[in-house]
Length: 214
Figure (tube, rainbow, N blue to C red):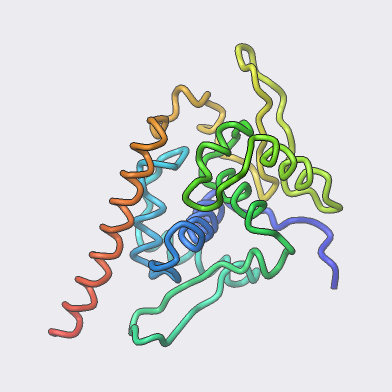
């Protein structure tokens, strides 16, 4: 059965799906992910707009809703007792890594310019040039079922921005990037994000050790 349109996701679903895509590309050693790691990654203060404060119940409910529409599946085995989860976006849709990276950034950060996407992509995919980013955006916008679209420029904005079409963006994403709390230098942001991922990994291993001791 052919798909006629993209699933319209809640913002919580967009955030969790974006997190799973991001970690699958940027830190495959920490992927698939547990509920706790998804929670921590969703609440990161870097590489996110807006910054949120979810709890475990929200993440669990969101994963269950994404499983029902086939965008997330459960992974078991591999020597871990914890249930882990992975995204199925690239299975449901024929997306190359570059396109998947663009969609991931839009899911996690809201409206972005090609330059912002290029600057944010390094840990997931290394674009050869800004032109390559623009080509991917153009391709995603011209698909039979479009994945992205341009949004009108606001007063004072010089570059065209793009949004994903997997559901409405939250109102707070209407703010400019200058007001974005995660708008910090790229190199520092990457180091902070890497430290946050190490914290996730350490927490998971600590939880595993505690369960084995009990």
